[in-house]
Amino acid sequence: MLKKNKITFIIAIIIIMNFKFLFCQVIETISVEFIREYKEDKKTEIIKGIINYQAPSKTFIKVTYPINQWMILNEMEMVIYYPDEKKAFRITTNISNAFSMPFFQAFLGVIKDDFGLSELGYSMYSYKVKDSVLTSCWNPPKNLSKLLGNIILEYTENKIINVELLNPKGKILSRSSYRNHILYGATYFPLEVCTTKNFISCSSIEKIIFKNPLFNSPLPKEVIGFKIPSDISVKEIKW
Image (tube, rainbow, N blue to C red; front, side, top):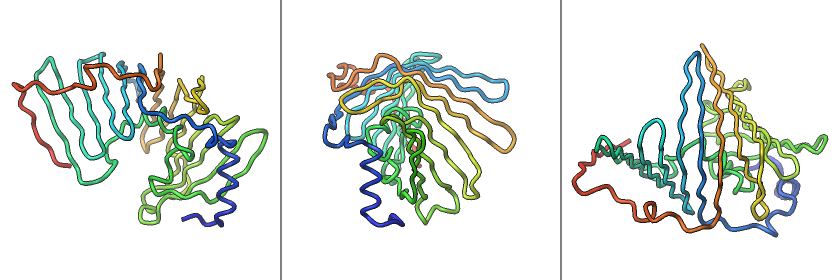
């Protein structure tokens, strides 16, 4: 749990959210288009599609470019379907919340008061405010501290602007910048996320643009009623 006392933690959260909890808008569904550009060395990969999210933990991803692909994610299951190739896979695990799309979590994470870090086992150990920017630092869960480092969040005017992931030795592994926010209810959602990752032998840059978000609107019928055709053989994979 937190190293500081509960009063300090409560004060910090109030500063972070600026009493956001008093006016919080419940999010039940989200639909948003995305363009993901990933660069590593001299290679560039572009993916386009639409994400449909249904609270609390179901995500439908339809990739429209460069392939035709469906992905359906629950806490403990991921289904991947290729309509053109008539192939489907069901991947299951016994680990709760194992399946998620990191690039969508960058958009969805703002729903959580602490960017969802507490649910992952992180605990806040310090914070400071300078020039209207609130910086909070988070420790990884003790059982994973040899693998994971600290996470640093930066907010300004209730908007997440930067997230840094460190390794156990304190070196920056990745840095994400959040821009072009829109306001829904009391929450600012970033429509542009740029992440730089540092590897031993190379680095990568991922840029994601979110477009035309719809909040709490009925999801398309093809999403709600999605089923893999009965004539498609589904390969079962345990992970």
